[in-house]
Image 1 (cartoon, helix red, strand yellow):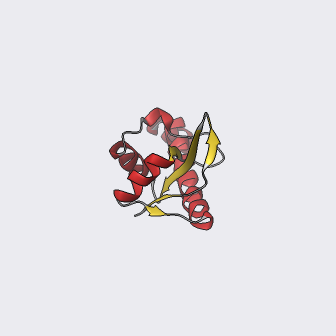
Image 2 (cartoon, one colour):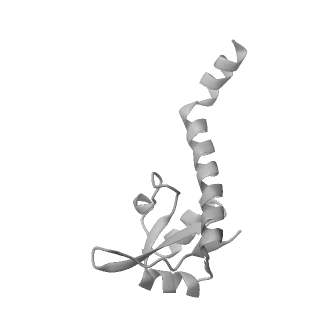
Length: 105
């Protein structure tokens, strides 16, 4: 599993921002925690799941082992994250007992 950070450098609120993604949600959240990012900053409802990080945090992420991600790699990882997130959301939307009852009928 791998964590990637792009070099998009989008200007917002006077700072330059990049995107942090990974091959799995668990890995992404664990790495984000190591960077001191709050779970509430996770961009769950964006076009793809990610954390926004400043260029300073990007540099720290690279020092901690994240790989610089090209656009194709970021998109590929983001698609995997979106699939995983949707699967988790559909499982939590259907508690085990309710799903069993629905399947039995």
